[in-house]
Image 1 (tube, one colour):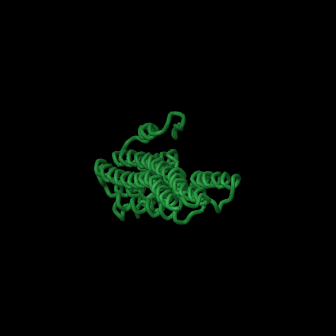
Image 2 (cartoon, rainbow, N blue to C red; image 1 turned 90 degrees about the vertical axis):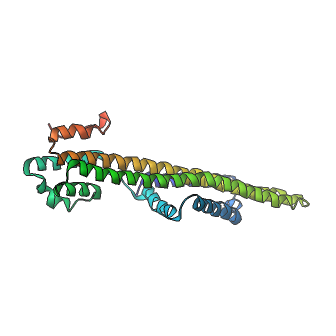
Length: 254
């Protein structure tokens, strides 16, 4: 589990809750009709904006904000260089037994194509196409979160307007104006909280996760392509280290 996401959500909602309790009671901030307007309206408008399957897929993509941990690029590079040395000494077929136990399915697919004798250009094209499709899925998920982040405050305002209309209809009793106004403003509160504590941050985290995963995949594509081409491991090391920031580059060979 990504501890940063968990800490962020707990901190955001916890501090809001603390602020509420320090200034009053939690019950005064609970309003079922307002919550229904914001949540139902946001989900409904999102379904109007995107096909049902994309919205359902976005739910699975969002799991990456909680449960996905990208491999360290340094570890990916070290593993590829180890395979490059093995191929250099024993040939590509020496990887056949090791490929079956790989935990990274993307690397496994690339090395299996190398073992099967595919040309470097073919291996690169197939793997790059998979990366492109992955980026499209992640961007769609992030875009859906962005959309929900823009819709929820709007439906919060709609709920406020509904509350104000209902309040104005009971102006003959001045004692009801204050409580009615508070209820009307709660929907704006719900919309702003959902947008800024959930949807917009999750969109940002999804894009960050996608960038991390894409970096590792590009390292794998470069590594596998050059392993298939029979590149010298020392030259391959320089190519792979170029993906890292200068301060993170740790040469594998003395």
